[in-house]
Length: 137
Image 1 (cartoon, rainbow, N blue to C red):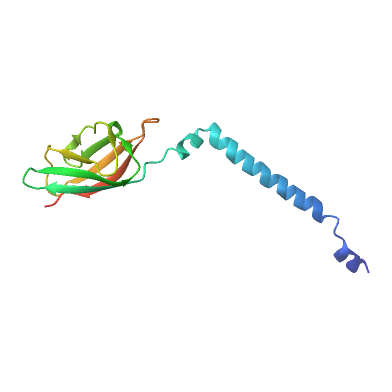
Image 2 (cartoon, rainbow, N blue to C red; image 1 turned 90 degrees about the vertical axis):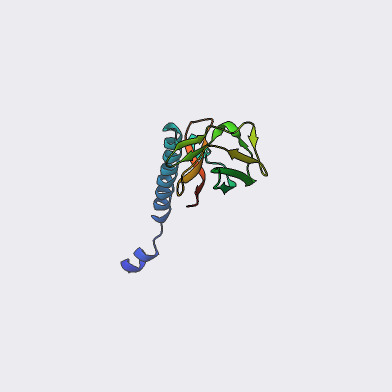
């Protein structure tokens, strides 16, 4: 009879569930508070802009056109065209850079060089590559 009574007893279930919920709440609060105390919360919102850029090469120059095909409007001073061989090709773009705009650069690049459009976050100084292309051979 004691075994049947033991299986029917449910008084300990409520305190166990309560303790599990309290531990879960404590862990979640600690994670949220820790994120903001360590400053990681500020970096979550600062992601690179979502844009589509295309590269058009003129091998006779050699020159390159970078066209904004769509996405967010970018502040020109936050952009830089960087080559893997030649370093900075175009220091910045003047004004806003929005869909339909084209940046033309006269500086030369080498065949097979990787060109990147680098965006610098105006709030934090971190950089992200938002477009990449390889110059034709």
